Length: 470
Image (tube, rainbow, N blue to C red):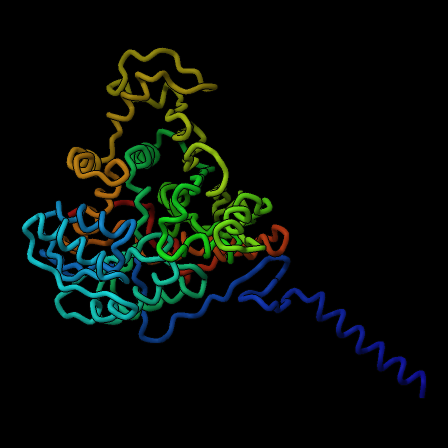
């Protein structure tokens, strides 16, 4: 009898051990661990839902717009877009009615534009989305409201443009993708750094082969926000960082390099590993301003990404320590190199520079940057066609030196001409999901995390990134 009990107990112990060592361990989080990799759920596309890859809708000659969020970014957006022809402003919304009144007075009325409908309060944005005279809803609120507002707008027939990051979790990323596919509406994340002049030039150079094959890229958001924390409505940004580990603001660094690497246009991000330092400055700020005793977001977070083609991307985040502003934009190719911070320059092979660009250039050193005069000549010779078209006006209007205006101009241009947008909902999901993916990796001591395929297998159907033109 005792022997029988012993073998029964042994069977139970072994079964527990086998389950604990399984290659498909369920955790309390929104993922499983399979073959020593963290894997998030990838829901299947439901019946009647179809891809929006290269989505083009009927041209909208006059784009009728509504704006939600008129704080740090929204008011400037209204002002910038007022310089674009073929746009009508229909409605303005903010949590605070005085902000709506201010934009109405100092932008709309000051420019002699037709008065906009005004909405405010906790539910005012829903009324804006329900209007039948709006084509595009432009969302500039705190991060946690991006997805509920975008989803509601798309479900009411509107195209949407959302400030960065578009979503704060993998689940929210899938919501954006699914609703965009169900409604066949555009959902663009407003990643302005894709339109900075140096990044556009480098994209053009890469597409023309000056760097050979780009095998590694770097990007970052390193910006000490200490002078700015108090300017976020209700302290929402510091509170969010206090609760969330990982790279919560990855898109500025990631977006431009994903375009160079043709992500979901011939390649895709397969997995990442991430780690962070302790929170020292972040905790100090939160303790002083909020009385917090803990702070989830490390002062410095570093993430390494591997693509399906074996290329690598390094992304960093630091908004807490004294450092010069740095987006770390770098491209490493088999034939050349581009660098933006702290010095803008190129390293290129002499034979790869056409003689009509620099007819009498000296012998170039592959161990250093090309001389400044050659760099300047390259910046002119390889200026991106979009920059050539709109650069002068963009610099006059402004918005981070003009890149914000180029972003808005391209959004409106594509809608007016019935073209695919420069950034689609899959970009929004891929670039935004780093927040939760990196947090999961950090939580598990740097364990690899598999990227969800938000295109559901369509990542290789488009061959190479490009801007659509009529």
